[in-house]
Amino acid sequence: MLNRESLQAFIKWANILGILSIVFGALAALGGIAAFLIGAIPGILMILAGLKLLKAKKSAEGLLAIEDPALQLESFNQLIDESTAFFKFQGIYYIVTIVLTIIGIIAWFAVIAAIVGSSQFY
Image (cartoon, rainbow, N blue to C red):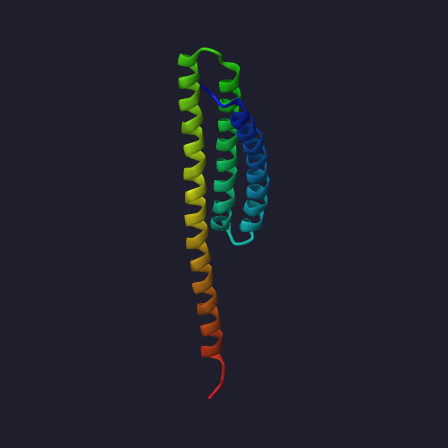
């Protein structure tokens, strides 16, 4: 038996978080373009994650509308698949962000070292 209240809460928060992920992903992608195109990758991943979450929300809405238990199971599996895709995109987003941050820190230290190395401090 489905817990309709929990599904309605899921729908509400999946919608909010999906929209926020798309908006912040777009802002991150635009900001990342300043760091060349590779900087836009985390924002694009965030947009894709937001789209997956909105698909999961639609699956949950469909699940609420179904009365037949056999069809509910199929719709529930679709909801789980879409939610899992969202979690995968979020995980990839975090990994890419960490890697790009580490690369940025290394590049920053390399630039500082080059500036100090080329100066006339003896």
